[in-house]
Amino acid sequence: MNTTRAAAIIPAAGSGTRMHAATPKQYLHLSGKPVLVHAIQPFSRCTFIDQIIVVVPAEKIAQTRILLQEHSLAAPLVTVIGGGRRRQDSVRAGLEATRADTEIVLVHDGARPLLSEALIRRCHEEILQSGAAIAAVPVKDTLKRAGSDLRITATVDRDSLWQAQTPQGARRHLLLEAFEANGDVDVTDEASLLERAGIPVQLVPGEENNIKITRPEDLALAQTLMNNRTAGIRIGHGFDAHRFSENRQLVLGGITVTHDRGLAGHSDADVLTHALCDAFLGAMASGDIGQHFPDTDPVYKNISSLVLLDSVVRDASSRGLSLINADVTVVCQAPRLAPHLPSMREKLAEHCRCSVEQINIKATTTEKMGYTGRQEGISCHAVVLLQQN
Ligand code: CTP
Ligand code: MG
Image (cartoon, rainbow, N blue to C red; front, side, top):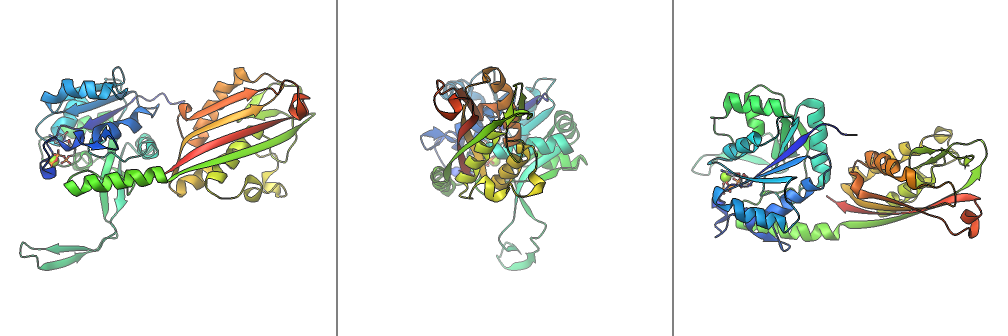
C-alpha cells in the first residue's frame, strides 16, 4: 500500500508565443479535448497522486475550472491557481499550493498531452528511491554546433546526451531547497534548479511520443501520434481451469483463501493469475503460459504464480505496452470469493504495476452445473487491454 503523499503540478500559464495561435496552446484541441485536459488526465488516474495543481494565466482561472470540471477534473483532487511570468514562477506558485504533508512533487508541462500513466509511475518510483528524477530520451540525431553564419564549428558527441522531458520531480523539501537557493536564476526546467543546488537527479526512460507542443507543426504531429496510439491498442484473452486436490492450499489472485481443498498443479495452481498471464501473453501475440513456464521445468515447481505474472508484465513493459485494464471472471461454486476480491485486486494491481481501478475481478457460480458446479475444480476467464506507449 502506498502511503506517501504525492502532488502533481501542471504548469500551463504560458502564452505560447512560438505557437502563434489566438489562444495559448494548452487550450487548443486534440481529438476533441484541450491539450491541457490530455496532460492532466493520466495523473488523475494514478491513485498514488493525492493532489493536482494546475497553474494557468490569472485571467483564465475561472474559465479553466469550468473547462476541467466538464472533464471530471475538479476539487478536491484538482486545484486551479494563477501562474507567474516565467515557467519557474508558475511552478513555484504550484509548489506553494502543495499541502505541507506532501512528500513527493511531480511537475509536468500542460503542453505535453501524450504521456502515459506508466511514465508517471516510473518517475514517482525513481523519486521514492533516489530523491529526484526526470524523464528523458536519448538524443538520436547527429548534433552539430554552428555559429550565427550557420557554418559548423563542431560535431557534438551525442553518446551522453539526453533530451529532457517532463514529468520531473523530487521530494518536496528538495525542490523547496532548490527554489530557495536558485529560484532567481532563469532556467527552463526544475531539474536545472536541483542540479545547481547540488542535488543528484536520476534519469528515467521517457517516451518518444511524450512531445511538447511548441510550434504549429507539433499540434499536427501530436494528433497523428494520438491516432496511432488508439491503433496501438491490443486485446488479450486467457482461460484456465484446475482440479481440486486434497492437502493443497487454495491460492487465487495471489491470496491464500481458506478452504478444505486447494487446486492441483505444478506451480501454486493459482488459476486466476494463470488466466491473467495468458491474457497478457495473448495481447502480446506471445503464445501461452505453458510455453514460457513449462510444467516439466522443476524451477516452476510450487512457484508463486505472481512470479510468472511479474515476468509477463516486465515483458509487456519492455515492448512499450502498458495495461489499460483487466477484467477477470472466476467460475467457482465454493468457497464464496466475494470477501476476498478486494485483496486479490490489490495484490494483482501491485504486480501489474497499475492502480486498483484498472483491475476488476468477478466471481460466479454455474448454479451447480458442469465441472465447476460439481466442485471438481475452478476455472477462470481474463481479458486485458494493453496500450502501446
Ligand atoms: N508555463 C507556465 N508559466 C509561464 C511560462 C510557461 O506555466 N510563465 C508553462 C507552459 O504553459 C507550458 C510549459 O510551461 O505548459 C512549458 O513552457 P513552454 O513550452 O515554453 O510554453 P510557453 O511559454 O507557453 O510557450 P512559448 O515559450 O513559445 O511562449
Ligand atoms: Mg516558454
